Length: 124
Length: 106
Image (cartoon, rainbow over all chains, first blue to last red; front, side):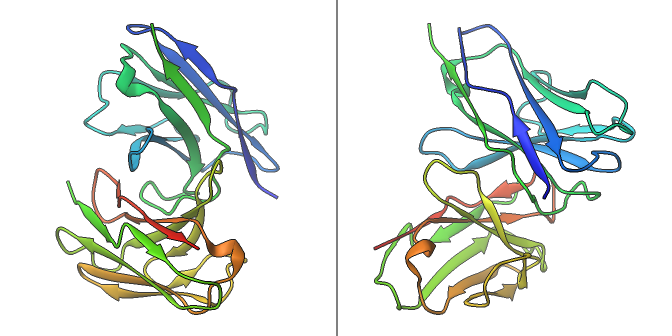
């Protein structure tokens, strides 16, 4: 069964950066698109961007461009590939649960499955 | 940016009743509409993609319909495990966007 496993909760300060990881369990990431979505308290889900794990192409939401980086750390051919989402210049409005999800081979595909989510709290 | 408006915000029903959830897009998204279910403390789960295609393992009491700007998710007979928040999402244009959700409560 395909699963996406994310890193644990983070508490960080305004102005800092946070890096959230997402790795696969049960299949190889190659030729897949990994998406990042966040959900702030009481807010709707918000798409942030994606990475093509095979060729490392990325696309970001205009809202986060310049602050977000999505990258991989190992060759896509191994099952140990980890995808990272780094968000910089944090403010309290970035407090949210951050999810990775796969849309398989489609940049604009449906998201299935999702990681379990990572709570990022930005507080001084 | 395409805005998705879901209604109602909250739907109070009993098990066994029929639930009808609406999602309206600010412009035509043809049939590129997706539905997710989210329970408290959990990640969203894919229910239906491209208006009416149920995801693997989704029971047939969940039905999606619509096209263009108006879409509906119908749960024919609510089971206890169906009480959750439901989100629609458009994948027609960038940025991908989600609706504000409909909470189906007992």
